[in-house]
Image (cartoon, rainbow, N blue to C red; front, top):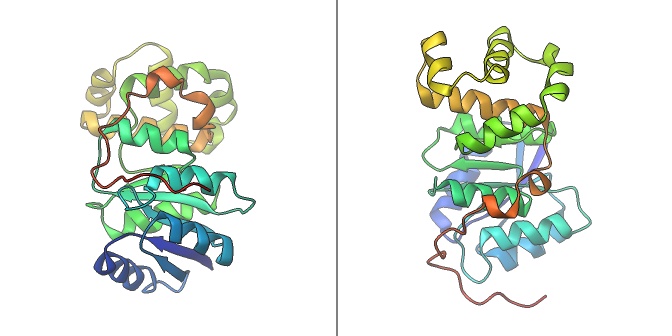
Length: 222
């Protein structure tokens, strides 16, 4: 059983998520919040396994909520659920401590898989990491990845081999007859298996500050 808290300022979204999640007996929704401040109180009170939080919320947005949850003495992991697929938001969410980043346009199965991955200590991203970051990190951790090779599929091992040889994503796609987006997604999943501490592994200069969240207001002091 996985306990989940929901944070979104739209009641209809929360109701839809609750119905979706509770259609699977594996998931139990323990509470809902309409903004980041309410979400922090809910996490402190219920200590859920996962907080699913919208990126754009009033009073306290999803990024700041994630940062504060990561500083709390709880084991709650945060999955950001958003309509925004901009890589700047993705990187900022990961640096804030998010364990998952799921686009609202994704199917329910993707959200279910994200929750299972996060519970297992893996990172789940439905939006691919920037190509340059993904490749640099795969090359940086080459020795570690080689030691974990038994956890990869034959295709993943071959992809890594090609990356280490300097092949481009386009070359890899042509080799496996798959789209460029599929290559990017597969390589990003390898980073999730590696379990990098993104907050440490993404240098600050790699994160271009995203456009100001339209619903962001002055943050409430702790």
